[in-house]
Image 1 (spheres, helix red, strand yellow):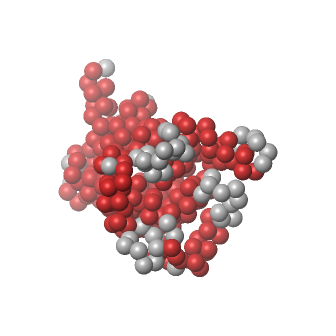
Image 2 (cartoon, helix red, strand yellow; image 1 turned 45 degrees about the horizontal axis):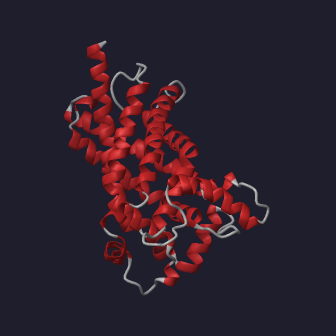
Length: 310
């Protein structure tokens, strides 16, 4: 996924991943908030409702323009370590796997999956808090969570009060982790695999090196790779958001697969399991296009700069 893979470019991977994550996440934050609100609303209670478009004037009228970025500070704080770990892990896993796996597409698929899982495990509490903050409406006299740090402290304490033992339940910050991992592994793997395969195919077709591909070509490859990957794993994203934003004492679902069966039974496939998919297209295509291509461009620039100034 770049130049001089044999070099030790850890710092460049981390910086490029951070920049790519911050820019892409801020750009798609309004769509992400609407998507979360739509996903966690059940189709059975909104079967005859106006769909997700009614959230736009509703949020603007009740909360103001900046409310579309509600929860984005937590998202950005999360995305810096998440993207840095994802891309650094991907590069390191890929180098390690090349010694055991000959086929490059399989290497990229496995390395991408492992990188996605690694990043999720390290940053999951911040993702859960972001979902809770996005669900919370502005204008409340006493909002449940004042900010990200307040939510990180309160959520484990609330779980202890609900169970009645008063203990701090750190596990409450990992509610929905399994559903996230089940979805993230194939999503990240397919995303990296498709992105690298398309870049390589175009390089061969045009008779140029991968590093000479234009930014717009990289953007297009990123958009298509994200689109293909999200179709496969989207149901787990719906399950993840519902489990993250559930605040009751008991479990909402026994497992991710039980959740899928229950959602299909109660709400159907298109209105339940794939609820908000159109919104996810609007979010995923520019998001993946921006961060995959921007990571490549920034990383290659930083590595070239280091080489010329060493």
